Image (cartoon, rainbow, N blue to C red; front, side, top):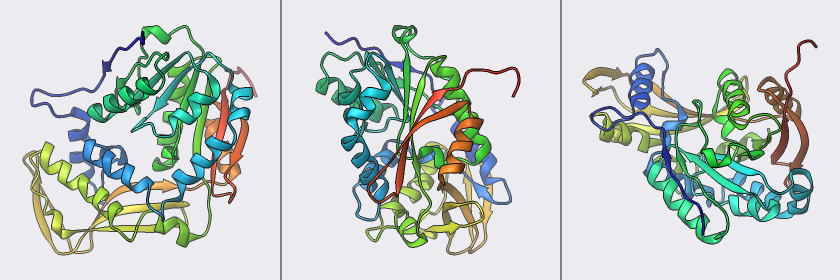
Length: 328
């Protein structure tokens, strides 16, 4: 019999709205460069659209990462070993997860995701595929401290953070998250993390501006979500999806650009945008081996092993929790 338990850690107000979502949106829309943290792209509809994106011909990261997970299973088994609780941060539909679980014979699986319905459906599917594996879904914003289920407290942990989601964050936020993961997972833990590598600009840009317009719909869904959940009046038809390469910051940026002057309200607060003004919705930082190593080390992790796909586009990195030191 499979042990199951669900935990909900999202803070909702009396109207059922995520308190942090409202706070982030109102603060971000009030800044000189309007911006909303990328994690709010992933409500149920956004998560569905992102799953569609991963199958697009332009979107190479999923295929590249899946190639590594399929082709290096024996190495995962040797370097990670059996009996760990796999804690997946931002699990989504967990389409890559079975490839990892098949490799390492885990003792439990703990998917963490902010999208509750999507999380539970994915957890049900995975539990059915691995009937002897305890699955403990946790609905939570993994950008904040997460308390894991008691059932896995004494198990060694493997954090799984695929898809180069770490690239969505500016460096201070990414370091904070890595440190939080280190704290959540504890001593003796490991982290298997996806990191997208720097390559030619055309390939990188196309992955975030596909010809079918799915990424554009994904981006505009953020404005639609604001309208749905925060009593917004944003004229979504006046927003254009933009994806561009910022070489100074080594990242693809996604924006929603106003095609005409607009006025709108969110939770009763009034905002305006000039034609050409944007809401910055996502970064996707790309890494060199050196910059990836430095970021992980700053976050409390020491790299143990690197894997690349056959075209060198994408990396999976296995890292160990760094033990505290009192001196250099």
